[in-house]
Length: 147
Image 1 (cartoon, helix red, strand yellow):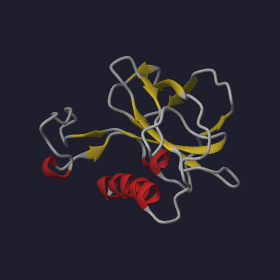
Image 2: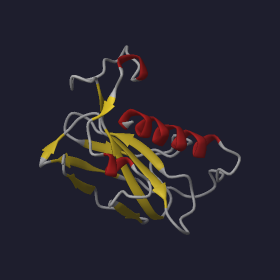
Image 3: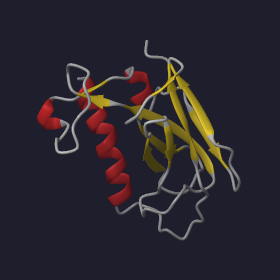
């Protein structure tokens, strides 16, 4: 069940990026970066997805944290950043069932990957995390709880 929601979130982002309703890349995008901490610790391999809320135009963005917990976002056209507006932010960290990382040569579905973060952070209707992007942005700092 946990894996299914993570997969659904990723598929939803892909569909938004590939669907006919996608906004053309005529919107200006602004750099977005930040850090994700879980229980006060930086974690690598956390997927960070910005989904547009309400009147926000554009298709959102996607990034992943590095070893220091830092991320940068790209839009569906691989441009650095996202358009101006308010976003619901989702987080996932897929690992093997034993908690070990998924290898670069492995597919999440093949190893039975599970989301290591609480599902609320990966539920578009329930995530408590939002972010507002403007023309200039300080790095975001997202502090999540593992329970």
